[in-house]
Image (cartoon, rainbow, N blue to C red):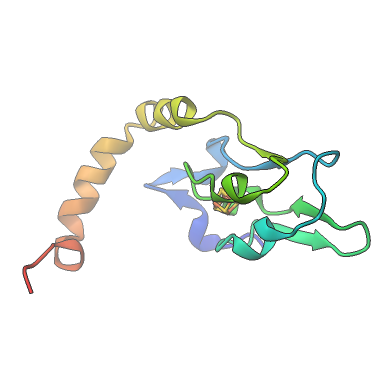
Length: 114
Ligand code: SF4
């Protein structure tokens, strides 16, 4: 199931952001490394056809490309690279949201010398 904890990204409805992996079925040789490595359970595995399937695209962490980097066949692509991510960050004023978040979560996130 889509995970409700990923519904928002820095307060933005995740479904308003076009960022998720696409699997080229021709190139996919079924290693499954994307399926087992993604911590957000974006993929499921077609055991019969030995293909990775994107089933919950909006669980994907905006900006992450781990599965694409791991795929030995280069079968996974994203709507764009760093430029696309920076465009998303600017479009939704993510840095202002992060600034507020850092203050709100200071107790949890502050670095302290041991
Ligand atoms: S980019 Fe990251 S979060 Fe998104 S599907 Fe791939 S491994 Fe999972």
